[in-house]
Amino acid sequence: MLPMSIIWTEPRVPMTALASAALSYTPEVAAATQPLYDRVSRIIPSMEWPLMAPLVAEINRLKRERNAVILAHNYQTPEIYHCVADIVGDSLALAQKAADSDADVIVQAGVHFMAETSKLLNPDKIVLIPDDRAGCSLAESVTGADVRLLREAYPGVPVVTYVNTSAEVKAESDICCTSGNAVKVVESLGVDRVLFIPDEYLGKYVASQTDVEIITWKGHCEVHERFTGDEIRGYRSGAGNENLVVIAHPECPPDVIEASDFAGSTAQMLDYVRSKRPPKVLMVTECSMSDNIAAEVTDVEFVRPCNLCPHMKRITLDNILHSLQTLEPRVEVDPMVAERARRAVERMLAVGR
Ligand code: 13P
Ligand code: SF4
Image (cartoon, rainbow, N blue to C red; front, side, top):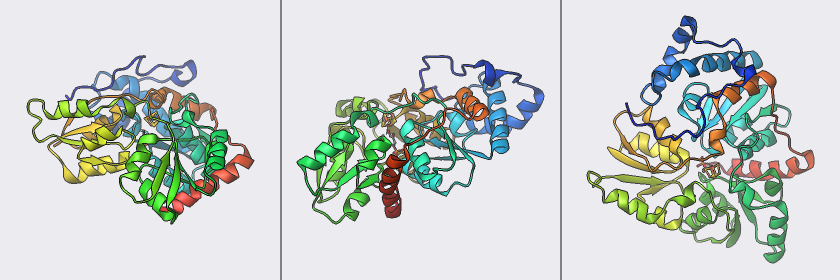
């Protein structure tokens, strides 16, 4: 059994009265969910599964009844990522798949800006976020008014906005990007300089990969900003870590990226592990990434400097079920804001990965 890297601050399966009503671990539930447990058995202890299986079975039944689809970000916990999600991926993949969806209901197992992006691309569908407090420190670091002031200070300079922002900020922007396509989006504009908001470190990473001048904002991801170059060098010099491969998310500070072997979006990090199969890897990002890939890839050892995103961890099996039962909380975007924000997201989707 691999060590669990997630430190839970509250019961892992908190049960609301509605979600838990009449759900129990019957022999039928055990048999029906066994193939799903097989996917996560290296990560989730068998004694926890009887608490999760009834929720997993009921979520999967209700999804069919509601013609619902669950989009789960790579930072979701293994029981969500491997057992109830229909589509998993990085922010870009989730936006692309949301645009293609023919479901009536979209459940976003991720944070609020991701659900808003799904709503922008599916204005006539019901989009649910199982806990509407699931925010993001980057999204909170900039407002639409800030962008208008920036435009006054830098007239004519296009605004490239990371998708980790509110619809209001996207509406003030020329084009969006994710960490999976930021360089390509910046270069697609054919200009000498851009305003890049709100992630300072992603902006610096993009600047290191292009000749376009990048003017950054001071937003940071509260999960990735905590990693340091010294910490990475400390892991490298540890006993048995001579061949350690370090892969980092570009929301990390520049000294972390410099100390790493590879930087990329969450999907690019997973692709790196799947295709290159380093014997021992350090994933410098949110905890669940290593858990999710370790459930799938058995010949790679993971060193886990676990930093938890408290916003991503607000989403649980219990509140996904509650959301499907009640079709709440719904994500709504003011139509006037949505029209302008959608343009910036669609421009990004046209550029691709
Ligand atoms: P990705 O687009 O790489 O999945 O990143 C989203 C995110 O919130 C990382 O912290
Ligand atoms: Fe936001 Fe960082 Fe959490 Fe991603 S990991 S959702 S950027 S706070």
